[in-house]
Image (tube, one colour):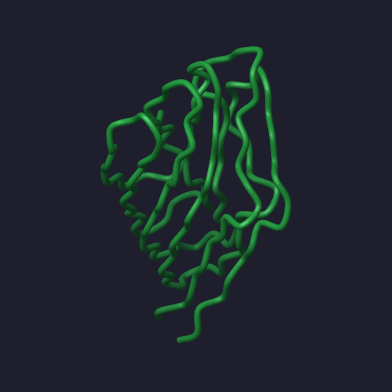
Length: 145
């Protein structure tokens, strides 16, 4: 099956916000009882320890959701993990002037609920400085069954 690509065409910046919210561009609709494969590459930056916290959100009661992530960037140790739940809030390590790349790869076997899969993010720690997710970030997805 063909991959559908969703590109982020403009920077998105938040300040003093530690409540996860959907990214304005990095999301896609899913049908009930359908299986998907998805990948995301997210470029971000933060200053003075504000950092970034993220999650992958989606419809209630999937049959299976599993994804792995790798977070790496300037002045930080590489963080990796795998999760099996939508909405699990993950804090990425922070340091001053982080420029980082987050890659996420996963599969979704959706249940009876159609909906939207979205990349959610916020600041790890509230602060006076910006956290930005940059244009050029993208996600891609495809139906596998």
